Length: 467
Ligand code: ATP
Ligand code: MG
Ligand code: MG
Ligand code: MG
Image (tube, rainbow, N blue to C red; front, side, top):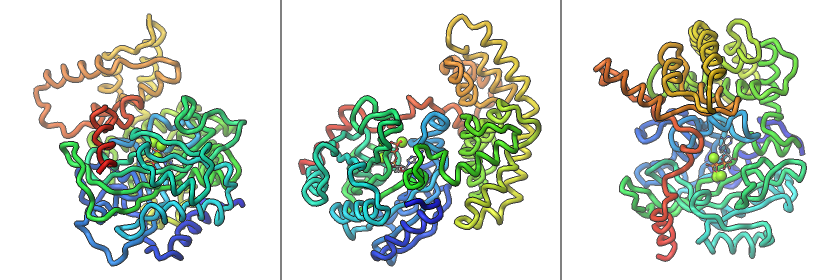
């Protein structure tokens, strides 16, 4: 069954609407009144207070296609873009929600029904995980759905205890994976090869039961609830018979537009994939009111734009190209998101301005970096070089790290920090700067979900299941 992304989005929403779910439009990627969260990183974010019981709606079931950003904070996939077939900064999460209405059994049944009957995915290609302690979910999958035990596994809190952030709603979860077949590298969930792109996680069913407190303790939510999330781009890849999100309709259109704008004919490069990803996150951030700046969300936007511009430069782009992709983005996503067309001018102007500004220092900075790399004795770019690029040439640290990674080098982050601190001291006016997310930006390794991965956290969660 081949469907384009718009049809899949609609089919999902209709399936749940037919089952009593209120269709709720996507909220902004800037969380309404949640200072703990940088961006909306999942479909449940706009419903956070409903889960907590402090906001009441006139419905107890909802469904949405929520625009999400994972480019900062707890869930950060910026470093994955260009390296995996399945991670984006911006993506759409299809979700169904129960606020104290149905729980595990129905959530699992709905998901299975939608995948195997509505979308007609072959059952034997679907794999499932549940939280280690969750016998109830395990039994529903095996005894009621009929998943063979060879395709279900129990995984610990690292992957099967979902949390929005360091505090807030959370709970054990059950994930559904799709096997793209032996021609793609990777292993089933729970094996050392799971990070490959063969077995791809498509849908996460979260059994929302707790509110994680700042002190690390868990308070039960007023009602056990359901929060699910399925990546539209991942399910589109499956339904379109391709193994990478970048080969789906939406991305192919953007990749071709990008190739044209930078003036290349080969559409296979990693840089084009990165640019196609970044035009979505940047445009939608601007739609949601963020502008490039030196702090907070604005700095995340600036960093993503500059990465895109650098990748265009790598392909030989002459002049501003990035803003030219807005047109294709509107063609692809304008029906689902009319605000794109409404803000077309604002988006194009902001992107073009930022691009022109950075273009002035990009080339010079790259020349300096390349000189430094030539003289390196080891594989680490010194902190003072990273700092100079940052301070004088406007290279966000992650951009320099991205360049380094392409050449199998790394950057000296502590050294950079030190140079930064020294400059702050020299300037003696550090208080005039706001939150600097650049200094909080961690490499992908470090930004992996560290919240509960200590033994204590695991023990606390296991305790919950004994109660
Ligand atoms: P992964 O393990 O592949 O990084 P995840 O466990 O971090 O995914 P969840 O937080 O469970 O993802 O989000 C629910 C769903 O959203 C995932 O099952 C996936 O389909 C989709 N998704 C998550 N992150 C991304 C991303 N960066 N780009 C595209 N889709 C994503
Ligand atoms: Mg992830
Ligand atoms: Mg996962
Ligand atoms: Mg998941």
